[in-house]
Length: 166
Image 1 (cartoon, helix red, strand yellow):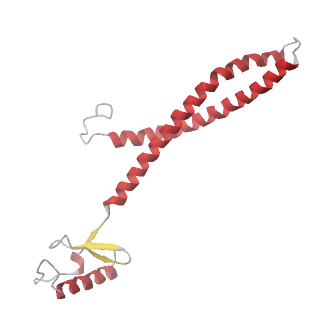
Image 2 (cartoon, helix red, strand yellow):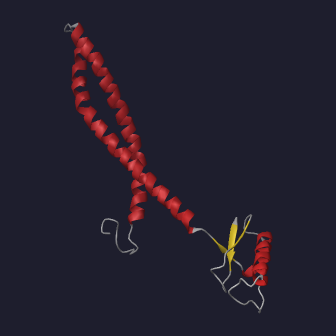
Image 3 (spheres, helix red, strand yellow):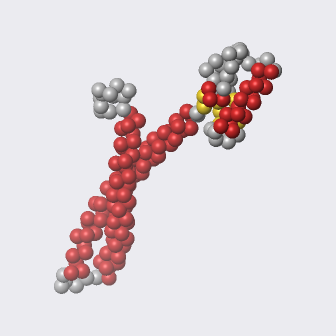
């Protein structure tokens, strides 16, 4: 669908199927003539009017919605980064303690079954930490782009102000 208006009566919107084309403009002209014949046109076009004078009306709302979606997605990415960072911090301390215990496996000292069982449980924590750390690194690379999107959104209309000052 394409919409047209004209300078003499911008409140009149003519909607026709298809894309902006000569054929669509001709259909809009047919609608305009019908409005004139029915006396529903708020202006007089006695000087003539051509389809080339029609002005295409573009929807600003879709542009705004797309921009809003980008900002919303950027916030979600940053939220994911925050969650990932907390998870890595929680697991790091525990993983470092377990890492110290791994050295027991490389020593000549005898180990008990209980120590081995604790190590095996600890390996699960190490695995969880490694996976969380990978997710955090990936989230951080995505968050750099998200931060740029938000900086752009927060930028003041005054070009002399930087985002930190706005």
